[in-house]
Image (cartoon, rainbow, N blue to C red):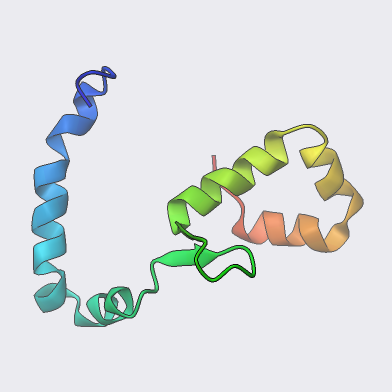
Amino acid sequence: MFALNFTHYSRWPPLHICDVLALSSKHADVFKEFSAGKFVVQTTSNRFFLMAIEQCHEQRNADAKGTGGAIRLMNDPAALRRWMVAGPEG
């Protein structure tokens, strides 16, 4: 983090670790789902290719911002509705 000049991120790992350690006692239902592996998304039929949910969101954002991405959404009403409901806020 420091080598890439992400000094603002350097203060969050200790808090994240404390949150993760307290998850089983504070939010048992979320802990149960995480323990069941429900923190990744499977985007292909390859069962060994799973990615973090946030990474999947970033990939979908890149798809929409890439060449023809937004145009493709405008031409497909169902895709546009999905994007409006589940797309990024900002």
